[in-house]
Length: 304
Ligand code: GDP
Image (tube, rainbow, N blue to C red; front, side, top):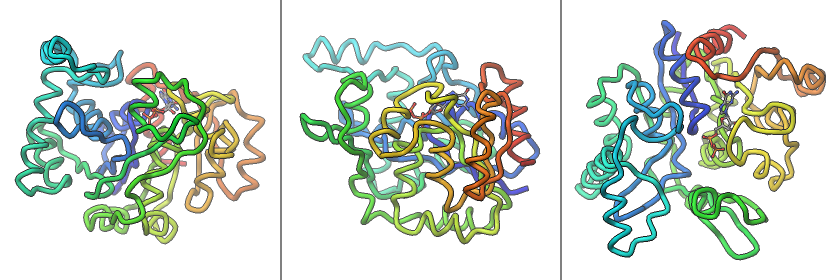
């Protein structure tokens, strides 16, 4: 089975690890909206967490970066007067240094990511949704913030007026992503922030149409339980977008292309509303605290 997984950060990485253990031909399409220039290098958090997780070198407890990494460079940067609010370990920094060097030499983000994937010995494809720069921007009463400035530097505290995607309108879906979706048997929307991780993909012209036109069954694992996400600012950002802060809201947001969604058993009461959208709804234990949960949910998503 040819599976394309649309992935954001931490929640997605857990499901990707489950999907990687199944007998499928897996392609990961990664969010680029939280990519950011930081300390002179181009950081791509969602691409990197997918690569590190599948290679078995990620820091599982933290949800980002490489296990056992040191932070010497960041410490030195601080001594030199840099605020250094964005955490980047030394080995993680090496990934971004190499990426920046290759991009400056004319390589595309797709090519650079493929190089990283190969260096880590991964057997699946990992593709940025676009090679063009797209940034998730949070409009606040004090002005626009990049998602990382909003969530990491300002700890998600400012009031969110709206979310927009800088650069998305002129971005193009890569031919590699187009071909992967056209050839897929199944598209899995991983548990990711619907607004700041899946939103930037849907904002790239032509991407939503690719999903709606695809012959693949499109299925999702909800990142919400009740009115809260398992982690991160999804609730706050859904509210700012005028979307219900629960699995019904997520299903509504994806309803144009979604065939089925797996939601928490605790949210059984929501299934009628979801089915009314024309989306098949399955109940499960959707928390992935152990590798067994990741594999179980991956298998469920290949069957629903
Ligand atoms: P974030 O909102 O900035 O963290 O962006 P991400 O795209 O990395 O979002 C991670 C999403 O994964 C969040 O909305 C979480 O609710 C979700 N998530 C994290 N852990 C789990 C889990 O164990 N199960 C499920 N279903 N979702 C999860």
